[in-house]
Image (tube, rainbow, N blue to C red; front, top):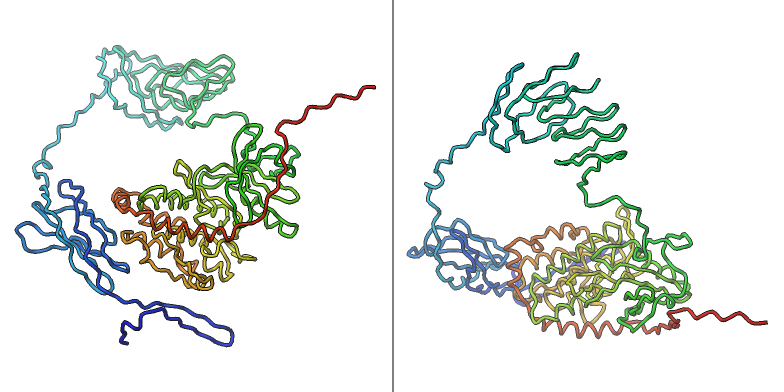
Length: 620
């Protein structure tokens, strides 16, 4: 089939039968050779290894690079690497001499023109081979300790202290574990006579005391051991001299190298390997959503007036269903954020769904619930005060931001989503408004008004649509069963916005927006020109039309674009973008957002923080 420029466009294929119809779309675009990439630069070099960087070529689609080098005085160009998807390459085992580099970009249309040559760099040769064959100095052998013969006394000069322990004795009659110790022999070693009816020492040369009746003989006679108490246990590690434990008291399981004598009437304290210390049981505080109320209920939902324990201050934000106000706890003076949601009798259970989700969450990447109150008209959720800004406003505070800044935020969002999905919870409204960045650059997922519990075995569809229209996944649009892939889709939309300053599916007509979402039709060429190929591949994977084909959270974490190895991080830090397009996007985004805000006026009666003084009793 021969095509021309007039055939460029989007094609829809529809199949129909008496049971229904099915359609799919494809796009035909004009292929052209890519432009030349930037001249290679070599910022770092060490011996026969060099790091080569370059600017991306001007091409509308995905492409790869071919890197070549030329030695001075040699007219031939040698291919150093091909099929390179990134804009950097770590060249190793380069030949000695003065080398220059060039590269070209390849896409579906073919190989484009070569770039300008890099400046020559001098590559050092490998170290001489003689160094590898130098003989190593002879190993020193520690002297073997000499023991006196049986029944004789011998004067032995004390050997120098050495870290090489004597060989352990493997006696079949022993049940002790071996202990590694350093033994310093005394000047005169006199073997002790064997007790009547007792076993003969396995190694003459040290003084041993008779073992208790019925007890095994120590397998490692490296030190002097005191007799064990009657009915007591023999120490598990006979590596040091231990004092006898009190009658009936337990022997420490792990003695220290210099144990102190055991106190009378009590066991010898053993060192702990864990930083956790035993202590009294901790009672849940009010900071824990699972704290029990005085009446014994464990839900933590208080039926009362929140204005008495809290002082409500100015309004901070307004959403589609609720109002966020700052409040101060009167008893502690701490500042929290209160989300106030108005409800009617028929939608009370739907409103309480957000509380049921929040009370089960406690993670540093997720907004934490402090308390919850329900009144005849409102649900008041008292949550931690996430001091900071929304994620896009945090980016436009800078003149430029790098691709590494975007990766840092994506990694933290994945940590929060992994925590939610591990508890069978889906957020279903991942968008710029619901991702806060604190002043410590920590990401927090907020606003769980659309969140739901899901069954991983039997996924179900939602009774009604949840979330924001332009951030919904295709299965949410079509009413199919939902699960964690819906949150991965929202993460992909937000990543696309941060790397382009554009919304991937937004159209002037809402129906056209829905059509684009259902077909997963978006344009990667709208991303910033210097965005990396790895970033484009990541977006293409997460914005897949089929939920089963989208990566899980763990697969996203393992994506090459999100790795923190030295070369990848260095490359991401060199790719920077201006905030001009992102500021323009936020102007239109704020206008669309204001059209969907709730118009409800929250009326909360103000109460005094201190109770009034009791009136005096009446006089008769």
